[in-house]
Amino acid sequence: DPTIPKYVFTASVRAHAERCLHALGIEDLFVDIIDVKSCGFVTKHSREAFEAAMRIASVNDPERCLFLDDSVKNLKMAKEMGWRGILVGRKARDTGEIITCDDAENEIDCIYDLASILPKLFKAS
Image (cartoon, rainbow, N blue to C red; front, side, top):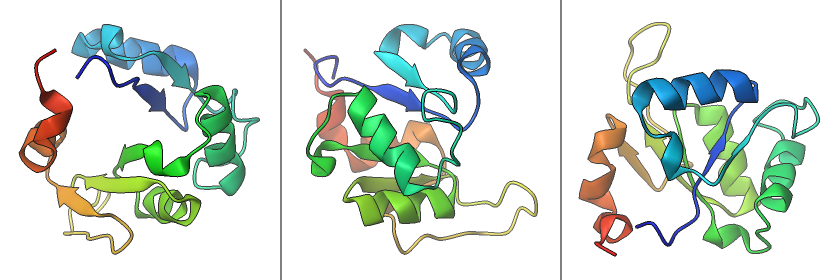
């Protein structure tokens, strides 16, 4: 749904995120990139990073935030902040073990599965 503003919230720097979005051909889908620099170089799974992300995105109500991530630590903080969270990728990056996240409202294997759990996000405009 193009009426919903979307941001990239990354533990990396903007230039890296821009290269990734360009390589995927999806850079036009996001309003902005919230990177480690714009969050004051604090770790992404810190309260300060999530507060900075909300401030940058001009969001006052944390319940308006839907957070998709592959990190259980990041999803834990998202829930503590009042954000909705979805675990994307149920295999650990380093070990390949199956992971689960009690702090996520849902879990999907890959981003392409998002429409199956939140079809209203993909309504035609």
